[in-house]
Length: 215
Length: 150
Image (cartoon, rainbow over all chains, first blue to last red; front, top):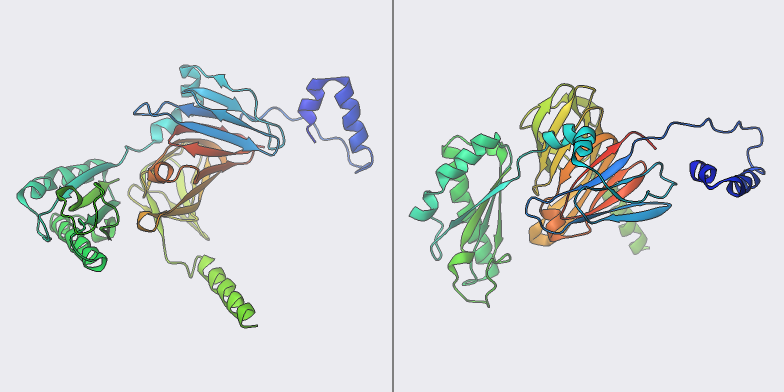
């Protein structure tokens, strides 16, 4: 039962409430009024100002938040979310500062390109290794994803294996520099995840790559 | 009858897979910062949260009154927890090669900040945060929520 809202809606609602409750649980005492719980949802601005939104839904209703610092309070699961309002930034800090300050740095991605049908690091790719190691150290990263990709010049099976060999080359390089095996997540997408979409049997330098993501 | 048998076998195997002891450990993310009282509850274990520790699906992240915890998931999703907070990584599915994506976080109480990762960008609508008073659906978003109770 929607106790608080009925109270706010006045006498008629109260009468409806008591009528609805009367047949059931006659012996049960009425629930003690409880202080309102502080349940608040707020949309924060995107780093890149991309459009974003959240939708807050419960049994009683739904609300869209589409503007930065728009917030909504929700008293209970069976009371519809309130009217969205704009929360000032000091209040955002007061309510959410501890959690916002605990957010991690965003992941960072490096792309190492490879020569045609080669799994060896070329000079350009080798030059990126120090920056990758820096990012790993800076983040104290224990989750480094190494994913190999190819262009579409061979069969899918061959490309899967080539992508894997490329990823293994990068993995071996990082291992030699002291990165822990348990922190490396190595896989191949073969030619299934092309940066530049090409028809089959097409060479493309952009697609011959290993993506390293440091978290 | 054969269908029934195979369906039963399927249910049995799925049931077995869902038990922690049988499940292949899916690494969902890692702890980036832990301060004060911050633990990870994993099955019957309670493990002090430490920087770099890997997180698994079904882990419950918990902070006490002086606790803070920061984590990043394998798709780049960022999570910050303030004090007196409990968050479960209920499901995490990130298999870009197979086009499989999903993330469900359950915030039982406390205060959480979030920024979205690749799951939210690649499969809008597949990220959900459940709380005792309502469910949040997210699209490419930074947001925060505080939950005192239902």
